[in-house]
Image (cartoon, rainbow, N blue to C red; front, side, top):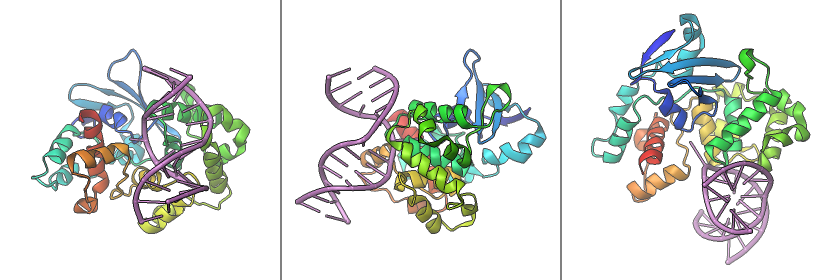
Length: 267
DNA sequence: GCGCAGGTAATCT
DNA sequence: AGATTACCTGCG
């Protein structure tokens, strides 16, 4: 069991911040969560002031500490916010406890390809169907997110059961390219932002928004600034249509997350 | 039944 | 370059 103050790690806020699709409440048990990431899973409990992760200190050090981005100092980032920016100041306060999860690039690529024109619950359903149908079996009836080869092997017929709609060919193409070695997405971790962006945009069904989400949540490129309809709305309504993320160069993605969470919850 | 949901790509002007 | 539109599917 590893305990962390909720002000540093708030699972409920993270789950609602739209960056991951495999974090869910356990029904009937208040404050209890299940978190799935690639081929790992974790149970957790949230009380008034604390988040308790149900794993050993070793498991925490080996994986979850990095996954939750716990070594980054978010307080110093919040301190960089323009004090004259009332919206962002309030957003950061409201979002206390949100962190940018360091998720698996492949899982993020597929999840955000699926995300287009879908609601968050619908995205979750798709990701869960893919995992249950094609992902490696784990204890307790859980499933890993399927690897590229597993989705490629499923083929169009297999994927047809997962409510992908017109995104099905996009998912299949990405799986085939990644499985065939044509797109070595894990080796892209060491590429500079420009090259990584270019590679991501080369996938059919990946445009600027999806590419930026994959950069931010899958490759830890904390300065990526995805603009979706919510961010667009915030910029239009609170910044008269103009917001320059380069003001927060180096951590704009965290600022984006605050704007998104506050804008979606309070606007 | 109809419009829409955290976008993209093709097809206009 | 910028604007417009179709696209699967599930839900209100």
